[in-house]
Image (cartoon, rainbow, N blue to C red; front, side, top):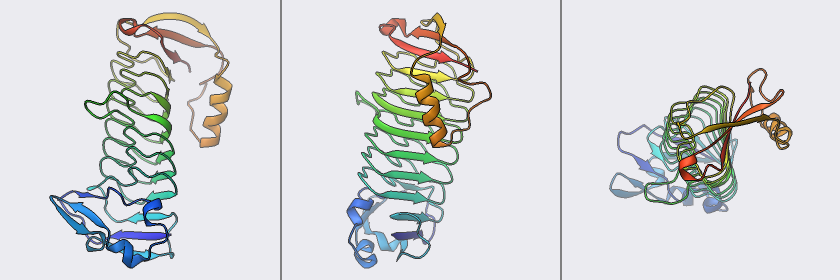
Length: 269
């Protein structure tokens, strides 16, 4: 276990692409300090910005401390191990990760878990825009894994999502589930406008009536056979469900009819 404490915050972005548990496994703190990171337009050794210590109070394979709100790509492309971030995380945290766990104790900026392929991310605070989304020009967003946000999330949550699960306890912005190909969103706070716009397949579960595009139609009220499995999974994750959610039937809306109408939005509570 290594603890990386940021020496001082900087207005110039610091990118930690490649600083992952699997990359530093077996390296000494001195060897880790020599690994290159991107500071603005220059490559610099990691030790110039972080004090690196082994063991001690570290609670994960990589434990980041300090004001890391301008540190990008924490946990990006990780395939195994654990990362814990005490302070706010910068953009692209957990992007394209395929395994392991990433815990953000004070929130995250935009593009959290973008194009994630596997693993688990927990945010004990709020997250920015484009959580689990596809990068501009890409055809697929998140294709596996779980993202659990205990606070709110911004716009374009799960954009072009293909597989996986995103859970948001708080509110989320506009275009949640836009152009979804498959996968599941579970949204337990208020939901912004144009939820599910352009979705092809997949499931969006909400605790309150979302503002759907006019290309959605009410289909029926029913109790999905998979709902108890999700409720049990939410209980294991420690999700704080709204009172009454999952009790009785859910209202099912089908859409987006402009893209085939095979997606479903299930409204309960």
